[in-house]
Length: 327
Image 1 (cartoon, rainbow, N blue to C red):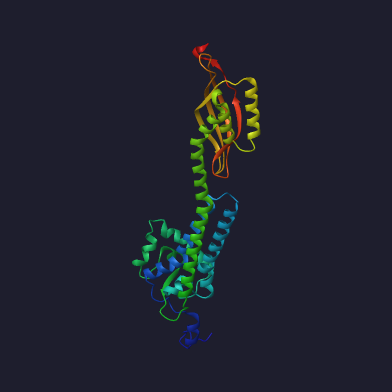
Image 2 (image 1 turned 30 degrees about the horizontal axis):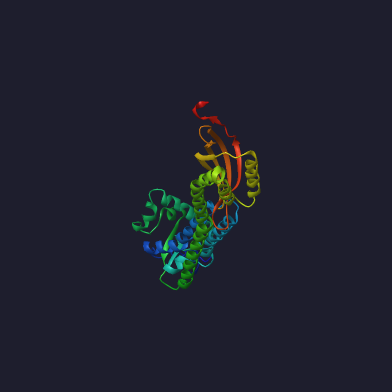
């Protein structure tokens, strides 16, 4: 070290030990614009992707796509926000608006300090965002986070990287990713669930009528009624129904009229459904007609032409006959 006779440090050494103070404070609007490019755009894409992941089936293909894309976006934001400034002195947004985050003596800030600064921004947000507005009246344009980690956002009027074109590409790419995530969410989740709900409403209305027409027949029109019943069931269930109809013919048929008093859709997809039906009916003709009740489970499948058909009927509570008038 070179020391003058009066004990002061030489000019060359003083220049080495003392750095220039930070430049003039950056304007609030420039800081907000840089923050929007560096953080808010990425947060918007992350929010979209995480909503898709939350709505998708856990560990399904869409869940993995959304989570992987969100991880890539977070990594890009982290590298731009915390690593690049310590290497080149700039983030993408700050290079566009001419803002540099430096120490109080104008020195470059390392990545861990930048990370701590962003964490400290929680204190800017907690008191109704007052900390974000603090630069408007602070003499050095500092937020609460700047005060805590001893940094400042300075205006840079000189040469800086021209990254406006890159910023435009990033903004467009972020918009494309967000729209793609929203589109996948609509196609794979919302539209699928809407289709299932529409199918549920259809079978809730059509199912009871189909079962009534499958089980009901009139002796005077038994051939037409049996043919109608066979058209209402699937190819797989039709042989069983035909066998039941043959048994009825051999036993000597009587009028059999069923109607549904209550029903509920237990489960359904867009082309399959299971219903529970409480049924009442009348067997035989007056004056020997008997009232009957039964509880059945009906399985349905949608045919190639979009019509619901019975694929199975299981009797849970067998018909309970009783003569009219309580006899």
